[in-house]
Length: 336
Image (cartoon, rainbow, N blue to C red; front, side, top):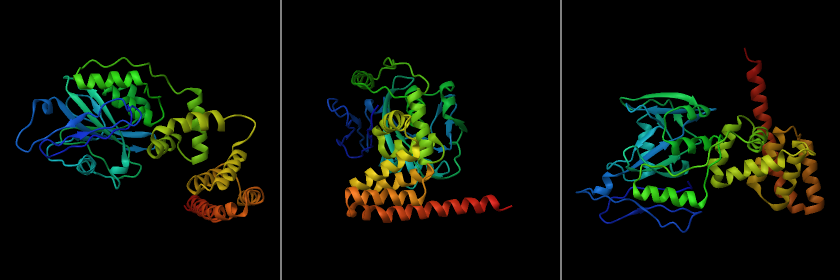
C-alpha cells in the first residue's frame, strides 16, 4: 500500500481522512470519528493501531501478547490520544524507547481486516534515530529477530510484507487493481484477504543494487536501504533496482570511476545535498582528495568556475570529516 496517514479526531462530526498520492481515484476514507460522550458501532468495528520498526543492524524488535501473534512495538491509538504522531512517541516511551522525530519517522498506513473481521488502520513508522532499550508491554514478551525470519513467524501478512520490504527483502505489489481490491475489502470489513502475487526472494537485480548501496553508502546494506526508504519513500526501490542495480552494477567502469563521474555531474548541476553524499561515496569507493580535486578542476574547465567554486568547499568539508573518522577508527584499533 502507499504512503497514507491516519489520524484521530475529537470534535463531534469532525472526520480524519487519508490520502493516497499515487491512487487519486480512490476517495478519502473517514478513518475515525469520535464524540466525547458516545461511540458508534462503526468505531467498535475499526481499530487504529501504531507499529514501529525498531532496527539494530539486521535485526528488529518484535512483541506479542497472549494471542501468540507477533507484532511491531507500538499499540492501539485510544480515546486518550489526540494525535497519531504524539501517540507513537508516548507508546514507545512506555516501552523504553525515545524517538526524537515522530512525525518525520512516519512511513505509510496499511489497511487490512483483523482476525475477527474488524477493520485495522495500521500506521507504520520507521525511525532512523531512536534511543533506549525496548521492553515488551505489560503482560507480553519481546525478542530481537532478523527480518528474514519474519516469513516463519505468525504475524499479520500486510505488516510482515511492509517490514520485509523496508529491509529490502521483497518487492511490494502495488498495482491499481490490488489497491482497489484492498480498499474495498477494508471498507467491507471482510476477513478475506485479496489475492496477492507470490513474494520471491531477492532478485539478482535487487542483490546487485544492495551491494552498490553497501559500498557507496558504507556499512550494512539493509541499513542503507532503510535509510533510502525513510528519505525517498516510493523512489527507494527505483534507486536500488534501477540506478544501483542496473546502472552502477554494470561492467565496464569500476565504482570509483562512476563515483567521480557522478560527482562531476552533480557539481555541474549545482546539487549540493546529493553532491555531499556522492563525494562521501567516492571516498568509500577508494577515491583520494587529489582525485576529487582534479574532478572539480575539470568541472571548472568544461562547466564553468562558478560550479566548481560552489562544489569545492563541500568537497573539503566531506573529505575532512572522512579523514577524521578514519583517524578515530585507527586510534580505536590501536588502543588495547
